[in-house]
Length: 329
Image 1 (cartoon, rainbow, N blue to C red):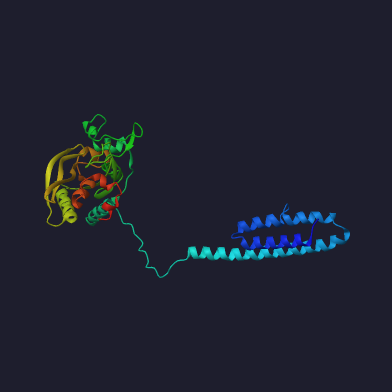
Image 2 (cartoon, rainbow, N blue to C red):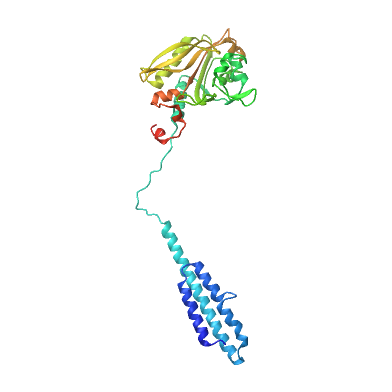
């Protein structure tokens, strides 16, 4: 039988539990325990019909009062917990504006990129037009139009990455020369830079991917003297006005005669690359009359020059993205 004492004791117990709830989840558990469908207060409501008629109204009224009081207490406690949670979250997210600022680290261009841009600037100053060409090339432009037919032994020195039987990753930026000359009328001065690919085993001085700058000049009465003047001027602008240069005889299928350019830098002779007068057949392939026009061409590797210029002992360090290396430049 329900008594007034039972109802008062339940109300006091519930109010204490509400005050003790430390977070919204605990408060919800208290609400379900006392006011939920199977809670303690609804259980008392279910006993009211068994009371004597004279007691039903009095006990029912008292239970309704307890329910209203508990619902109000839960609502108040929920507001308190919400405010506390918000204050705690704000405190955790607060920024101490009195702390010194943190300097934002800025990136910079890679030393290879900077060197390529510097090379382009030097040749642009000598009147060369900067062009780009595809890195995926056909055998026709990568070899055949450069006087390197299918059975030529020079192909063995350029072990290539083939995509199909006729398409490969370019082994030299000279392939762009063969493309650019088609449909143009001399005189012209062209320079191209970019990545080239050969199946070289990586070691301290070679990688399967390397960077090259290639240029040529076509016109009437172009001679080796013009070639030497351009390359010597370039070397002195890149390495310094006192830079010593020398030309050593070489061989390239698409130039005749051919020479390798060396500069004396950091107490050693360093090969910059190959050069020479375009073979007449290369001009014929491009529709240019070799009886009227002559042309010189050059191809300079960049990666090794960066190594020597900046004292980098291993070419692989240019690809490692090691901040101890990159932050020096």
